[in-house]
Image 1 (cartoon, rainbow, N blue to C red):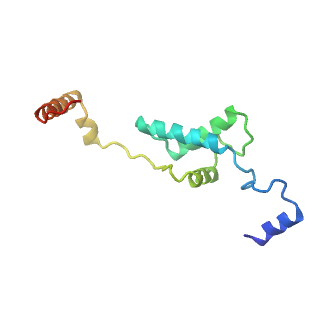
Image 2: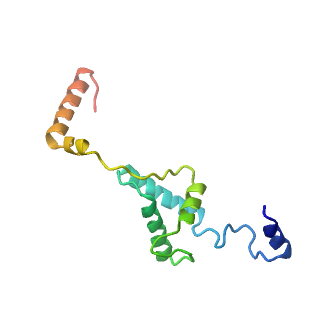
Image 3: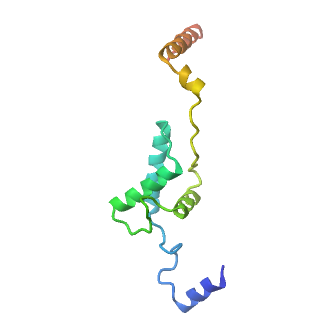
Length: 130
């Protein structure tokens, strides 16, 4: 622990011990959990959030709830994002990769219909039900 931090605590200059950083935590743990659940739900719907999307979402929530914040430029800072990901190790933020041209071309009605015909045939031959 830095010497300056210890001296501030000893002198009583710290008003609320336990706050992290200059502003403390913006969102409560319960509120952060709601953000995580929202991000996971979007990911399950194949619409993952990028780091920029998550920062904009945090700003919009803080603005809507009229929470004290140090955000600017319509999004939270990179420091907030690093802290958020550090508090929530279960959350994995990645940059999405574009769909390849071959995969996009291959995903059409005839190919999907052919897949499901083969799938149905395999289920029937194995005596499985859907």
